[in-house]
Amino acid sequence: MHPTGQQMSFQNGLFNVQGPSTTMQLDPKETSSGGGGTQNGGGMSQAEFALFNSDRLQSDLEAMGNKIKEHEDNLKFLKSQKNKLDESILKLQVHMGKLHTSGTCTIENTNLQGEDINEQILRQVNSAAGVLSYVQSHHYSEALQLDMTNGVVGVVAKLGKVNDQNLSQALSDYLGTRSMLALVYKDYKSVKPLEKYDNQGNVDRSGAIHGLASSIGRTIEGQFDVICLENLRPYVGKRIAGDPQRRLDLPNPKLPNGEYPPGFLGYAVNLIQIDPAYLLCVTAYGYGLRETLFYSLFSQLQVYKTRVDMISALPCITDGAVSLDGGILRKTGIFTLGSRFSDVAAANVRFAKPSASQTTGNYSEAERQMNELRWTKEKTLEDIKRAQVLRDHALYNFGKKKEEFVRCLSQSSCPNEVSVNLLDVSSGLS
Image 1 (cartoon, one colour):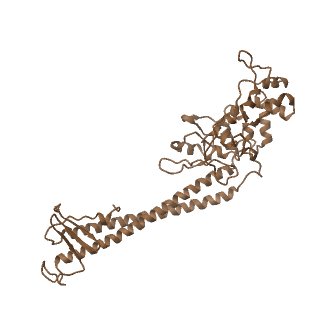
Image 2 (cartoon, rainbow, N blue to C red):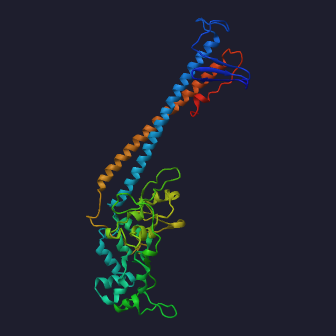
Image 3 (tube, rainbow, N blue to C red):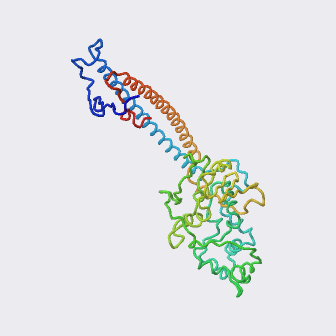
């Protein structure tokens, strides 16, 4: 064991030995002209030779430490590049999700357009949306419908469009027919004329929208939803800079290990395409339909390519998720099971598909960019592995050299044994 009262260190090229009562400073470049130890063949004392050798080893350790730092800096750079590639791949996945057109789509009427949406709503003959759509399209009893259409924005199903029919079906199934047929108004003042009540608070089925339905031989069955934009709590965060559709700048989901979930296509609220007329100033406070209506309906609902992708991403799903093959996860862990193509399960009203002139971007070009990004990521991962091997090898050599340094000092013939402090040499490398 080395006495605890003494310590040896190197500073500014000098060898320092400190004890309880003495401090000695030696310069290995100088040679002794007197005694003080056994001389070797070159005229250098054993102590001087040990100091010279240890100084050489220390220089080697410092050089190796610098090399390790270079490897660490290179690894840090490569990992930052890999993270940037992950971010770019995810953004491109979201973009491709907007452009996605399924070549094996099995849903009927894959060219669904706005006119077909009108027909779908008109088929809901006993709904409030069906009644209003009928009287508007046939210019029926304009005086009677005036109060009820003042301040109306439209029906949910007609206010957004989706590029992919599988996604359209998934979002429609998530909302359900009742929400898809909800009437959207700007403010509550415009909602009030829709319904009248008697003195007992019962619905007057001969007045307002119910009277309008009776006048065309229809009856509004059950309840229906009316959404008042002014009373919704809007999204107040940032929007994606330079995006003409004013999509919301929502943080991309991440798994507990820091990786992005595979198959993530984007947030439902951003995958809806909105008519430019409804992007701004729909409400008195300047908000559009994305940050009011659709954020209220979907919040941060995530969209995945497959049900398997969706299930694997459960740790980072907070507001539910859907998949293009029919998977639905609602808030609080509620799963929707069964076949999406069942007449009972499938929504009767779906979002329309934008016309070809509205579809932006090129899917083939996006695929090319995706392949290039993935190839670059693979090369970067290989570079990371090589850099880790070089770093580990350098650390191993540093450890062996440090052992040699300690051994050299322990074999020196100084009058007293010393305790060697290598922290100045190896700080941060172990």
